[in-house]
Image 1 (cartoon, rainbow, N blue to C red):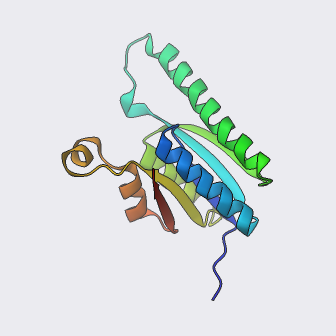
Image 2 (tube, one colour; image 1 turned 90 degrees about the vertical axis):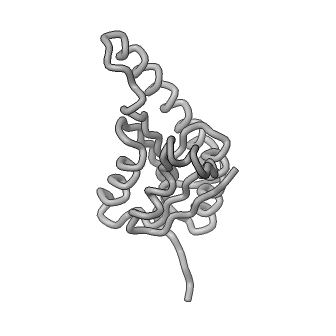
Length: 145
């Protein structure tokens, strides 16, 4: 039995864990000649509601675009094609799961960085990777930094 992938989704946030996951995703996309989607979710829950927040949102979206563009550049240098860029706002886990499900079965692997939190940190912060692993209809490869 042979396993192959045709479309890999890699959510990134600029952390060491997500950079490590991106490296794995690029390697897998190269190995399987798969399409790669690089995604960043600007977490709405962390944004203030005051009138000045639009400047913050704009800055966060600009940083997200830069993070995604850097990974896309790595993928392009590794001869991965095609590579898609996605920057959205919302709950990270919900947006990742929606991207998987909205693709009409196109995404067949998610490569996700995990910060490896446990105990009270995990309880207080929640875990995007844990929620995606539990609810994803496709395989999820978690990569710890």
